[in-house]
Amino acid sequence: MRPQDIILRKRDGFELTEEEIDFMVMGYTFNKIPDYQMSSFLMAIYFRGMTDDEIYYLTKSMLNSGDIITFDEIEGLKVDKHSTGGVGDKTTFVVGSILAASGINVCKMSGRGLGYTGGTIDKLESIPGFNANLNEEEFIDIVKKNKFSIIGQTKNIALADKKIYALRDVTATVASIPLIASSIMSKKLAIKTDLISLDIKVGNGAFMKDLNEARLLAKTMIKIGKKFNRKVISTLTSMDENLGYAIGNSLEIIEAIDTLKGKGPIDFYELCIQISANTIYELGLTKTLEDALELAKEKIYNGSAFNHFKEMVLLQGGNISYIDNPTLFEKPKYIIPLYSKEEGYVSLIDTKSLGLASMMLGAGRVSLGDNINHMVGLKFYPKIGDYIKKGDLISEIYSDANDNNILDLVNNSYKLTKEKTDFKLILDVLS
Ligand code: URA
Image (cartoon, rainbow, N blue to C red; front, side, top):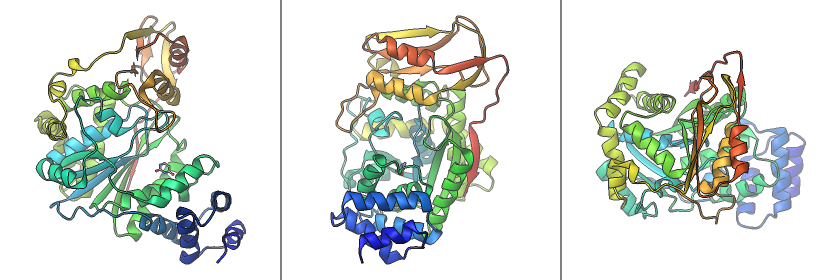
């Protein structure tokens, strides 16, 4: 087999065989095929798409290029939850705690943040002492005790995806449904759980801008799951506004704690309840979705979800006095309020700009080696459809420097109009 022949077949619209796809994936992963041939292959896929069988073979090859983790030692139902990346997205902390309180093991391996959406591990590391660098044995021990643990990735999962994703990033081949679906699923399938619960973000702050495209992505991932005998549920949720108010590491942890105490922003609370309930119902733990919604709410109001979060922090070395009393979290030099100069209904929020503002303040990384500042970020209060009056508080910028560019970016990130615009946070649920 020669790479150029396979590229040519894909370019001309032929269906590739399992052997051809595996040859390309393994050849590239283990340095036998150069970047220029893989780039060309990816671009051919971008334009030609892939059949269901091709997507399955691609996922299988990427999955088998790395380690597989079974967690056989953990008894009971196991769930992995994954978000495709959102601004202010701290859902994992609340959903994981609710599911653990409902008797489900949540075995979560997460990445560090890159770009404007922030990383789960970075957020947790804003809690003094919290250790996400546990080995697998320690991780399993904590899940056995608490049903919920979040750590950084310990093994080389889907090695091929790491290399191919980096190449896609610089060759304009990220936005391809077969490539995105196989990339995400190769990593999710590498960890053996009973259900993969996906939160697919759609809107101006997400990489999927269009609901129909996002539905197609969700359906493609569900189909991949079926081929591997794995259950997948996808909740499609809007990223046309930031989730909750807080964007930034410790700010998001504090908001998650507030929500676990029943005092969080309503949109964020409702999303967490819905994703938890979808997961509980899909696992067959309740007869109806309504029962699952009630169960999820009860886990917040009886404090058991909060206790699972606090116990995870304790078992992973974090200082739980910060969880009991979030005012202990250190604050940056400045908290700069921004007030509205106009009035009207909020009709548009440029969510991506809010994420970028937080990153520029130091809450996120531009490159993987960058240090981050856990204290900085922002709170952005308006929601689409809200009526804003002159002088209303729009945002509070948590900053170590008084940078006018960032204030301008936040000030220009929303639009007020005379007409009220409708907004829906939960757009669809597919399984
Ligand atoms: N996230 C992934 O892991 N892969 C993609 O291709 C896109 C988003």
